[in-house]
Image (cartoon, rainbow, N blue to C red; front, side, top):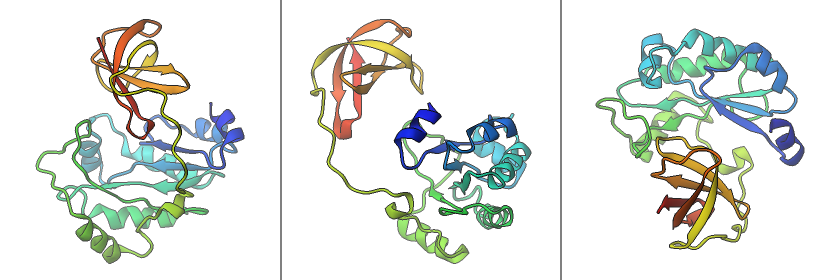
Length: 224
């Protein structure tokens, strides 16, 4: 998949928390992947595990993989989520670490993200959200060039792809893979990916469903 994307796309990037990365894997994708966006939220083991939501999270391994990426031909962008009350003191430490190992040789080295609460996201206990004005002010306080803009990633406005399904349309879909959350599966039809919710069907099954969303060419269907 990565090799094919490399042939088709101007830039190929991967978003990962680093847990499953290995030195051998990084060597294998070097030359095909342009940038790795590494989710790394704290330089403290305890805080990192709390924010990752898993006790087995190995911060030392993630740090080691960050160093391997930075020394490879793949650009490294470290992308922490700033969660007020949890990792406020870590942002400067993460920046110092990234600068020391040579992150961001070609693109921005850091992509600090503002914590947002949303339906399927992680919700640390008592975590609060900053408004954007406060967030950008705090970014300016800890360093220069930390604000991100569309042009930093080659993002440009373009015409929307034509919609292939109408909301309310009944469709018969073949399931191709598992979705991200429970009872969610993914189908492919008419050259588009369709997210099927509330289904107990398996990969390879067909399902009768109704399209419930098509905004921005993101298709959601509910099994009938």
